[in-house]
Amino acid sequence: MPIPTVPVLHAPMSVQLEDRGVKPTTIAGAPREALAVLHGDDAAGLDVGIWECTPGAFSKDAADYDEICHILSGRSTLRSSDGEATELRAGSVVVIPCGWRGTWTVHETTRKAYTIVTRS
Image (cartoon, rainbow, N blue to C red; front, side, top):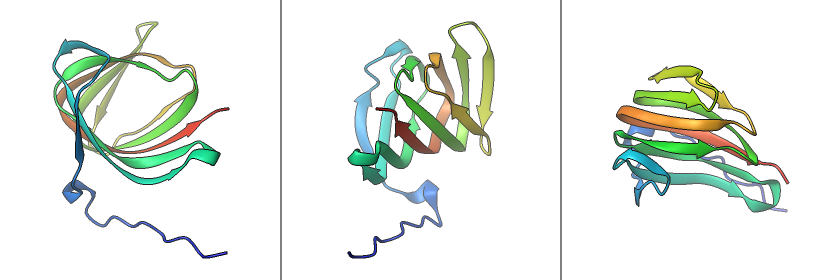
């Protein structure tokens, strides 16, 4: 069995991202997202990458996955469906647990490194 490569990013802010257009769950503004997938394993339900979004707001429903994010730049607010607000800025690390629902408001273009683990 071959040994897998180990992706290393020494400058995650310089990673070229693929434009994905306006978020399909937009609720305010016209937030555009872009991303680069660094590692994916469908069998394990694993997705690792860099994501960026321009200002605006969109709904988020983590119905079947857990996500950990390290905010690299920008400023955003997560507001859960029960009203709890969490401010995010460069350096923040946030865990979005499976079942979380709410809104993500991007105040300043935000870039994050993320890992998503989908539950079966």
